[in-house]
Image (cartoon, rainbow over the protein chains, first blue to last red):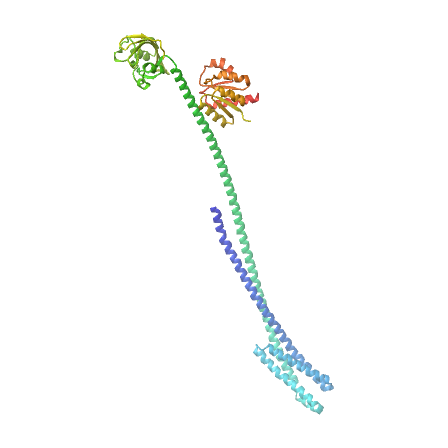
Length: 398
Length: 125
């Protein structure tokens, strides 16, 4: 999760920055296109107007020439149609001049030069009117007027002014064409550069996105691998734990079984010993009682804890046993020391009340390996004696 | 299919341990404590193998086994007892009456292995 989060943080900022860059470039291109479009529209209007001005200027000259030609034709032929044509031609020239002057309203030098044309044209119109009025007076009157007329000079002057106007306008057109070309080139460069930059930016963005996707794919694969390995490890560990638990459960059962078998054997052995009617004692090498069977307890009337760890001589005496005065039983001690059986030895057995019974004892050494660690004393009862020296026979078995 | 094991022993601890161990190994175990219950169980669900103690309150294991064998002569019987016989007695007497004699000091693992072995032999037969 941490890796994913960091990756997301890493790609977000560059992508947002690049998107903003693309948007900025798009805005710059749009604004440039808008400016160029507006400029083109303005240029187109201006060019149209300029061409119209040139056309009007040409029309002035051609109308003037037509008027002059028709006037001369009228003077020669006297045909009224030529006079009407001449008057109309001068009217056309005046009309074209008015349009041209209106078009050059914002250009004072050209406007002034056309004012000069206007005065010359007015002069030509006045000559026409004078000539038409003088015609009824005869050809001499007309000839006199024509001698004083400066038609060629005026026409030439008008032609010069118009030509200068046309040259000027053509120059402006050329300049405007050049400017338009440069502007178009500049726009082309701007748009081209913008498009290239946008393509580069988009390409870089694509690279970042694909790189990010690739990184994430690898991270996902690595995560999947790690998960699979972890799952495998967990399964292995679980399997090991299950096996260990099973083994442990088996061992516990086995242990319980062993304990139970041991306890059963001990109980069974104890049961056998306790079921024996003879008195059985287990004694240490020092002739102290370690264990007794039920027959001993029944005969002596004592509890086990009263007898265990006490000397055998407390309940048993061996008549004529040398050295028995200090409470020991030398015959038993010697048998145990020598590791030999002591069989059919007459003895006296005493209970809690002090009653004594004749008995016969047998001693068998207990061996632990090659060492004698104690002995088993088995006592068979004979006749019972009174506490104060009397005796009686008993057949009772415990 | 699971094998049915009949455990006959008057000691509850023995019955419990054998039931737990054999159930864990996949056997279906019925554990009874007397000859009377054993006869009823044999009648209701004939076992595939019997594990029987020797000394019980109402009968002795060998007599009970002979009685069951009359009904189920082919069923293998393990005599599992705390009475430890000498090898000669086992060979000459005990093994003529039962399929296998095991004393209770035998490890539980060996008891289970013996059950596996006898069940496999019984199936193969």
